[in-house]
Length: 171
Image (cartoon, rainbow, N blue to C red; front, side):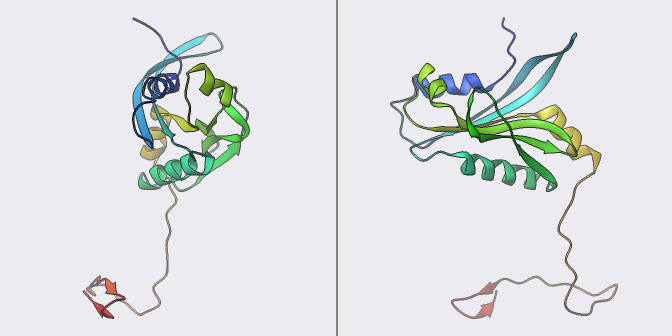
């Protein structure tokens, strides 16, 4: 049995072993990690995701994270540039929600890629799932609210139809 403090190295190992598999390769793993903060040691659930192909970059993994957080209703987050030895300087960011860091994302440093014998660029992220779902359950979420540009009253029925530009009709 082994104690690990990050999930991301497992994904990098998989990429290193799967160079013969067609690209793009997109993988993730969720698992338990152990973190030490001061004299305290605690287990936490973590999810890591990584994308490898010839043009994998910071923007792509940022979009993946933004989409995931949006699906969870977490629109009020910040990406704060950070430095981490596994990531390219200037191409890494902490994921911050309500002032608390819940993870990191960025482009994997070429030296790290070389250490795992990875031949393609990799963009990756790792998120503390415990903190993530704490934010989801807290109810502190922002959502887009738009005012109607038409008059409605309580009891009105709203019918949503999709407009087809080809037929110029509603379906």
